[in-house]
Amino acid sequence: MRPEEKKQEIIVGVVVLTILVAMIMGIMWGNKADIFSSRSYYTVRVARASGLEEGDPVTVSGVPKGIVDDFIVREDSVDIIIGVDKDITLYSDAYAIISNQELLGSKKVEVSPGSSGRLLGEQGVFRGTFAGGLEDIFETTGAISTDFQTLLGNFNKTVLLLNKAMEEDVQASLHSIHNTSKLIDSLMVADIQPGLLAMKGALQQTELMVDAKREDIDTIVTNLKTVSFTLNQVVDENKSKLKSSLASLDKIGEDLSRLSVRLKDPKSSLGKLTSSDSLYQRLDSISYNINEIVKEIKDNPKKYLEHVNVNVDMFGGGK
Image (cartoon, rainbow, N blue to C red; front, side, top):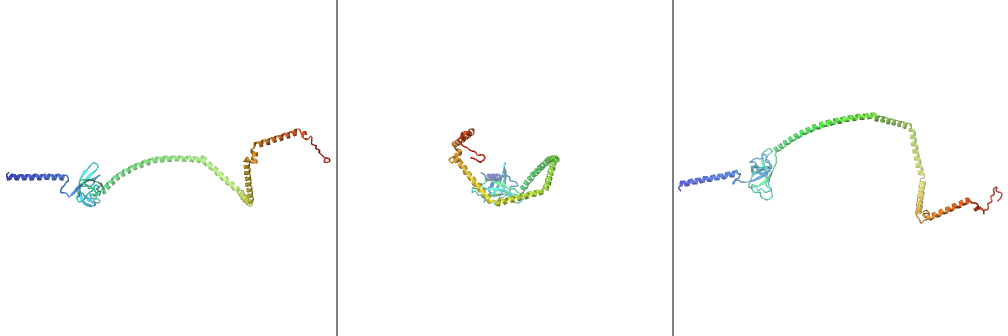
């Protein structure tokens, strides 16, 4: 091979190799991969990332340690690709908060490395939350204001309807009250007033009677006081006699109780008298015989007087 041909082959090989290296570098650049980079890349999954842009800082414990590299929008979330310095170690329980750098400034991603002890590999995914700033507050306030205005409009309509309904009801109620008042007035005139006048007249007559009989009433009250005083004196003077009488009554009550016990006792004489049928029959027989004798004497007195010599001295001179 001639030297010129060999030189051309070397030049072609160098050019082809350069093109291949450039292509590989381009593909890696397009995939956000850099073999010479000093950062590790992770994915933070959040519900939304309003205001966050590529290049915004990533801080760990408040210290800048990376940047936001890219976004992947999903159906119900947003994946934020962040590049973190290789001296930062993240664990499986790491989490992130998207917050404001300043009161009205740009956003940042604050990362908490976690402490589970299980390393989170590069390209690992962990959860994050969105902490809204003043603009979010203003946005929320605007939405609330709109809803509040709508609510006020509905409230005003409701108040108008209530006022209308209340006016109708109040007018009807006032009309009913007016009619009831008229009816009460008519009843007062027709029925109640005569009764009140009669009661007033009776009260006046009672007052006149009391005034006319005031002396008699005073006398009666005085007599009642005197009688009460006299009764108190009588009771005080005869207290011992009353006690003795009460004691006698108590003794009589005890005697009656003992008599009642004896009458109820069938073994006692009184008990036998009240409970024995044979004694009753004997007494009944004796009573019958006495009645027969008396009847026979009345019917035939000579039978019993024929042996009796009776001399009656009518004038006291003989036997």
